[in-house]
Length: 211
Image 1 (cartoon, rainbow, N blue to C red):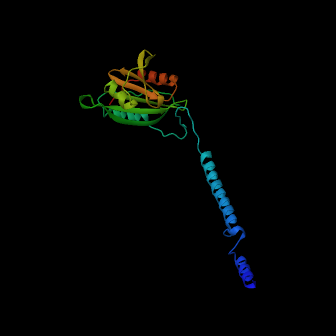
Image 2 (image 1 turned 60 degrees about the horizontal axis):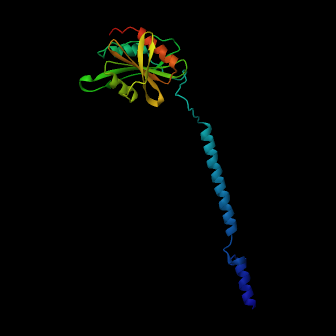
């Protein structure tokens, strides 16, 4: 009997037997796991909060800061384009608060109808964007290239005696299209209608550039 008591005492001393026959330290280990998981979760939440504070979402139309937007020499770009295309290019005169910030050229159409489109974009006084595209190509080809659409006109607007047909464009925007002296003029962007009209009037008034 004494020998058995000694064995049990030794087992208890070294943790071999506990109440209910469960392995030692199980409750303590579970608590440590829970605390560790909570710490990790809090760290993840903190990181997400820090990231989302640095982000913002504006459901409105695209806009830009005129102080940080790139700038383009419209006169130089359009004169350069005029020397390389077969149609007359116009340079609309706009107020100083219209900031030219992009220019490019691209091919339109194919085969005998292939031509070039010359583009210039402005950051407008309302901090929105308008782009003027000029091309000697077919209206349908220019529309397809510039708006992704070549569908039916949705209406028309008259500005200084010129009728501009309206079409749907990308990002729920609108495109205005007119043909001046055989050249397709297309205006598109996120600016309000008054700024469309201002650019349309300037285009109509502008004279073709000399090569």
